[in-house]
Image 1: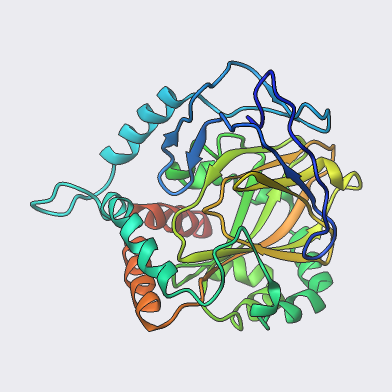
Image 2: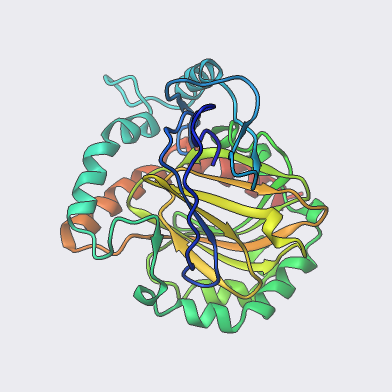
Length: 326
């Protein structure tokens, strides 16, 4: 991940084996100093000692581009907060209220979590994964039959994703999200649509395409109440150049995708994506509720109800509905 190590300190590199096939795991003793973009609200948190330009791993493995500076994030955050309907007498949107309450909400969720607080989650907790992996080729065939140009860029359908989706080569075809089913999109992928209906606690499901040369800047997600699943469908031949970095403490998990294989991670850990090849990458991306005991599950449901009715979701739904009527 960018910002590992200082200009005068060389990180310690260690390599271990992954959950599904070996991701590179980089352990660094050097300080991190890179901007972080909050995916849920598109604001930024800037850590100390940020230099201009490109940061490198001193081992020479990768050159890691930086994302935008913090002052841009603050301006973006002002725009985001100014949008949408405000709750009377409070003067804030459901989105803003949820964001402010999130630390308390996440604390309750994690006290009741049935899976550990780790960046990478063991797939054995989720029996439904094997069914998707068995039919990955059917899912892939449905995904690649949809022309890339017919899959909208996430930044075009979601203003609130604008900072992390500024690269329009990140494209997303939503199948289901926050209780809404995208009937027109599901009709294009009936096998996939039927399979995701069997996923317990599903929050969102989409085909995520990263076009050749695409990049998603370092960011973190919306809540500890969701986990993210990636099933690799079509991966560039040079797959080590198409990868995601996930930070966990002093460790960076370097995750290249492998066709037919999948993994689950907590996107509240900082992560970043590159496709440094001349081929497009297709995955099935699913978000699920974190398995929790009763109280944590109840808090998740209330939080997700608020997200469902926020402009964050309604903007995307309106765009998809508008396009489907054309």
